[in-house]
Image 1 (cartoon, protein in one colour):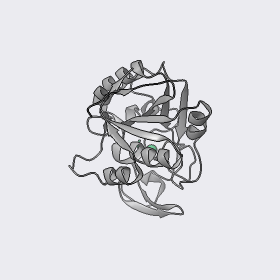
Image 2: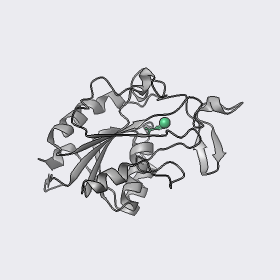
Image 3: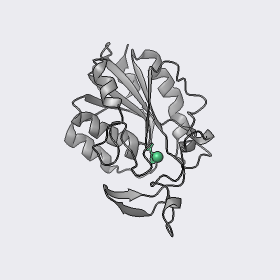
Length: 212
Ligand code: VGL
Ligand code: ZN
């Protein structure tokens, strides 16, 4: 990107799911997850506004393989809202794994929106549950504050960051993913999420492209 993006008061950084269970030694480890903490702390320093998303599942959540007899981790089931990947138990309400990475400086955030709180529905996007209809409150918070450009970072690129990008567009925001501040489950070169972002107009930027 040749020209830098100058940040304004209507820009918001949304930090997705930087929680212990997705980091090294966690219940649902994402490779390189710990490496996003430092770039995200730096972004929080330069952004005028910050909101945080937190994966927050009740015990017995239907996205856990343990809630479905005979199922193994990462198998799928058909749910009323479509196919659901079955995850190891993670980010359970009130457990240490649900806490933010201890190195993440959360002080700057005015809002922490929790998602996946309904026992029957998973939520990848920070905007909607996986039925793609039930709002989490994030869009309302961003809109009521007059935020227009949403910059996404965090974990995981193919799931929560990815779907947040797509849904952010459908909610009418300009959306950017800060790629050097995101971490992916999969280390394939090819990420189908990038095609979906291109289709709906989610831009990809680097931290170095942004200036206060
Ligand atoms: C996530 C799987 C299950 C994520 C959350 O934050 O990307 N992925 N729950
Ligand atoms: Zn989850």
